Amino acid sequence: MSGQIVLWIEILLLCLVVLVPAGYAAWPHSVEASARRRTRTQREPALALHRAQLLELERDRAGGLIAPSEHAGARLELERRLLRAAALPDEPATSTPRARPGRGGVFALAAIPVVALGLYLLGGQPGLPAQPLAVRLAQADARSQEDAALIDTLRQGLAKLDPASPEARQGFILLGQAEASRGNWGAAAAAWRVALAHGFDSTIAVQTAEAQARADGRVSPASAALFRRALDTAPADVPWRQLAEQRLAQSEHQ
Image (cartoon, rainbow, N blue to C red; front, side):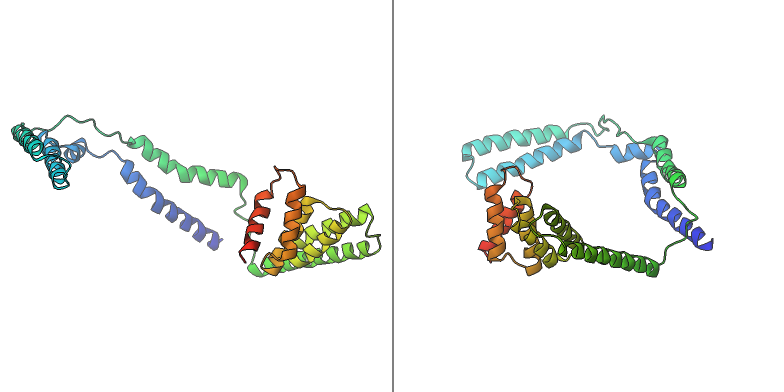
């Protein structure tokens, strides 16, 4: 029970770390403080604009983009504008206050952990004890042994069938899929190769070539030939076409 209490305290602290800064940003501060941050005089932007235009004009003259006579006239006009801007009254400019989320946004942020907790309590199981790592590893090992036993049983059954029969071919396809799911790429390629020997299928051919390439760590000439044959016999819209083309390109640059 004490471990669960510590866990809920940690979750609460994490929520506070995330939501408190966002809530402070959303809280409507005083109108006076907001107005002071937004206040700019009418004169400031005009002066800044004309000074920037003067700098740009000088860069154009230095780069030869404007004739000396045109430069003199343009500079004179900008200096007149600067004088007029400097004479503007030093009063706050009219600006539209930026919308703030207000207290409604703060309350919405505060409701997030409450709603999340409610959803967890509806579908979660807080009283379920934690599963130790050793138990999980033991269960994974048991499942792996069961898979190995099933694959051995499948191999024994295939050994009793005629390899040319449709049942055996389908069994070798399933065997290749089972070995590929365990990452045994060499065994998967060998099983699929038996299935291909008794009936060519472009998809199985690509799976065989890909499994062999993963087992070898490269695209061998035999795998490249299998990729190429699959591309030649498959429709244009097969989903693995790009993969096969990439593998062929890799084989040419190895």
